[in-house]
Image 1 (cartoon, rainbow, N blue to C red):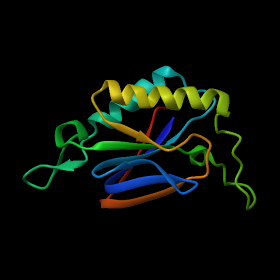
Image 2 (cartoon, rainbow, N blue to C red):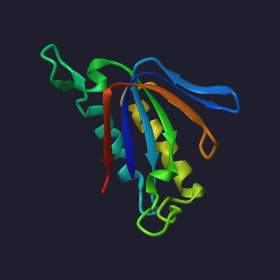
Image 3 (cartoon, one colour):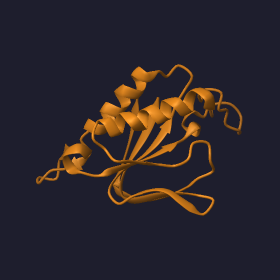
Image 4 (cartoon, rainbow, N blue to C red):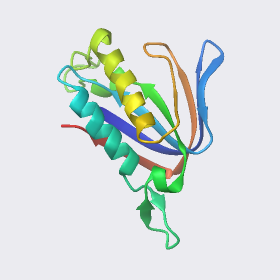
Length: 146
């Protein structure tokens, strides 16, 4: 499992002209899943996302998690995070999990974040989405389960 965390001042996802999820302050998560991912990967990454310290304290050091700082999550499924680009000019997505296994894991990931106390908005799995955000910092971090 691979998640790109983008600290955001504002973000939204639009599908076919309709906003499906929006946050004012928090993280935009681009969530990629691969064939070998399990519920243990989901739990590990959700805990890491909720506890990673990406918010500044009074001294300007990244010492606060999103749980301590406050903020919401905008979770967007993103199979292209597992693109293989070493050969040729067209990326291969063979390492991305098939939708029938990726969708339940993405949904479980979002539920795990909610269980940890976070408000989670989402895009629509498998849809063509327009993701808009104001990256705060910019702070962009990649978290992987393996």
